[in-house]
Length: 241
Figure 1 (cartoon, helix red, strand yellow):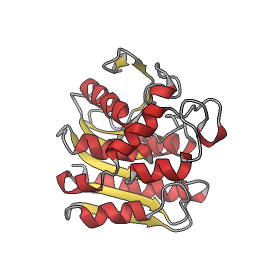
Figure 2 (cartoon, rainbow, N blue to C red):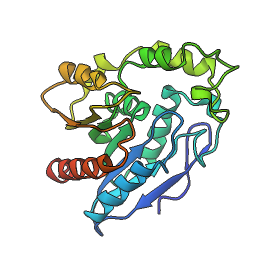
Figure 3 (cartoon, helix red, strand yellow):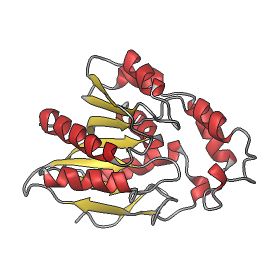
Figure 4 (cartoon, helix red, strand yellow):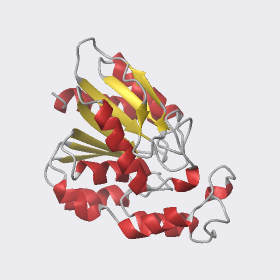
């Protein structure tokens, strides 16, 4: 429907479109977290849930992830911010809400802080303190030699660690987000602690809303997926008008 989407490096970005109500111009773009892709079960379920309620959804794999072109070792938040820009270019005829999971949440904050094409923003277990995350999860791994969470398909690069350190945290960008903003976080998230969402909420404008899902993990597994879909769909239908 949108043809081939390529980033500024001419790398093809893989995506799946879920059609909602015919004639609608509202569309939710869903971005994944580090080592993820567009086909994570809860991401696919969320897209399907939105479409079922008449809201178009497009889930995308950032470059170097899933079936998208590019090298995983070159995947950084900064590059994914540019990838998201390419997606927005392709969706110029739509009113876009961006929903980013984990590291994809940081991508959304960075893009939305300076790009008015994102009219609504959703952070799903959104990463806020990027340097703290990288140090906590990968500080004992040698960049350009080891792997993220011991997964050989996800090499840890110095470029990734440098980018996470340079960004440091997106918390100071919170006041720059002028659009309606939903934060969703699980109380049992042991990858990105809910404190990240609490910190950015505290620094944000009054346009932000935080929903805590009791017992939910970082990937909103099992019964938490249903609750996630319900909360997101309700918010989108209420505010994305």
